[in-house]
Amino acid sequence: MKVVETVAAMKAERVRLAGSVGFVPTMGYLHEGHLALARRARADNLTIVVSIFVNPSQFGPQDDFAAYPRDPERDLALLDKENVGIVFMPSAEEMYPEGFNSWVAVEGITERLEGESRPGHFRGVATVVAKLFNIVQPDRAYFGQKDAQQLAVIRKMVSDLNMNLEIVAVPTLREPEGLAMSSRNTYLSPEERKAALVLWKALCLARGHWEQGQRDVASLRQDMTSLIEREPFANIDYVSIADPETLEELDVIDRPALVSLAVRFGGTRLIDNTVLGG
Ligand code: PAF
Image (tube, rainbow, N blue to C red):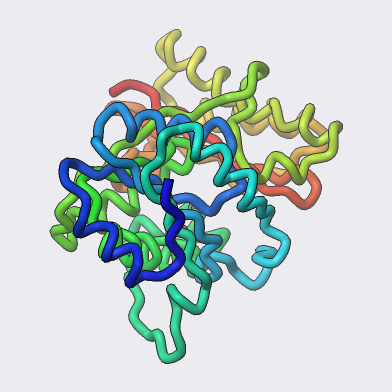
């Protein structure tokens, strides 16, 4: 496994690669969810490239960029076991040199849900992902379904800007009790972690009602909200039932629907989702 730290070195490695390249962009502090992306990339491609870069431009002033968990040594040891070919670990100065001033804005779908709570977040995500795609030139890139809006934004960017690669969505990996794996789970106290199971319970409730024929969004949303509000540690940011591509809220579930949630537990904001139908 090669570890490269500059854009020039990554590009030089890329031209030497024959066969398909699968790319897994990450912000490090890897967990089983990231490794599942790498394994899927391994199954589909000859070479896997993983990037580890905590991207400052996707953190808002209220998000703590400095406190984002980091453990590069452990990350590299984990990736080594997954047969990763190249790890790209640039510095912030390498990705955003002095005078950097070009941004990718995917409009519309970035204004809702996460975009509403975290203004500027998706501009940072789209910009860094576009840069990484240009540097790594992958045939396929792998993203977790857990960040459903991020996935929709990246798909839209790739389609609108005619980028020449395939985006592959990988299902969310969960702890045995249902909590979606996330680097942010490490911030939770034991009580908050127990309380956070309500996310999965609320999604299961929505699925159960939908399977029994409930199609009225207001009623489903109300049932989920009441369940979450019974959990004293939980503070709801949003409960959304929307079209999975446009993220426009639905009134009636007459097509596949993305049910997504953002809930705070103490200082930690967690998201989760499920798709009904389709
Ligand atoms: O999902 C993430 O970890 C990040 O948003 C990504 C896609 C690596 C861009 O920084």
